[in-house]
Length: 278
Image 1: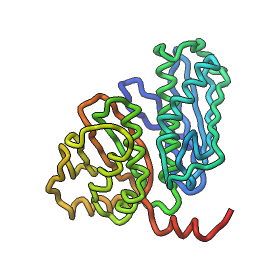
Image 2: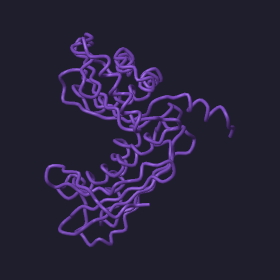
Image 3: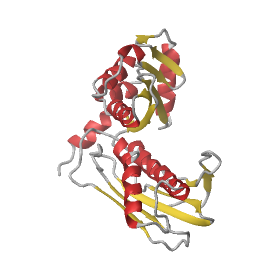
């Protein structure tokens, strides 16, 4: 169910308001409102999925609706780009389903001046709100991954392009060894570095940096001395409350940034998928 209260996203002073979605094992819903041309535009969405999650648009089902007045082809482009930055940046198990669908519908009843250009100020505002909504839904799927004890959020910077940064982030999020290390509360920088390296993105290994929460594990391609007990505690405490483990990866000096979301790999994932057949 969608909650009544909203909280601000605090984005550059023009933030939409984000309705807290229920991070549970059943329902994944979200909604927000944003001012477009002086009119309040609403966007709501619902999605499902927790296993066979490795979208190639997209390994799950999602529906998003809005009352914004926007040209169909402009809206289509917004939904596609927002999906690329959200649902296509999550992974639970690396298995792409045969059932893919995200549907975006806009009724136009909000009464705003019609948006004919995604690059206009109002078009950018609507797309930013749509992207924020879909990222919230996407994270709820990764959070609810089968057998998961935490959400993994990977942030990459320094890439030559945003596309490259997203590719590195998704590679780390999908690494079985990195996911298993997180489940075991092991601050294993080598597994994260390896996943970045085999992502297919070209970068100088001497620029590689890895950080876990606030703890730097690797810098300029070299491991750093760090408090392993503190890093272990960070993982243990975060997984203990089904929280978000934050991993930061630097791959160079470029301006490209990207994010991906996944979850840890537990014994329960194997148990769940070994005990039923389809």
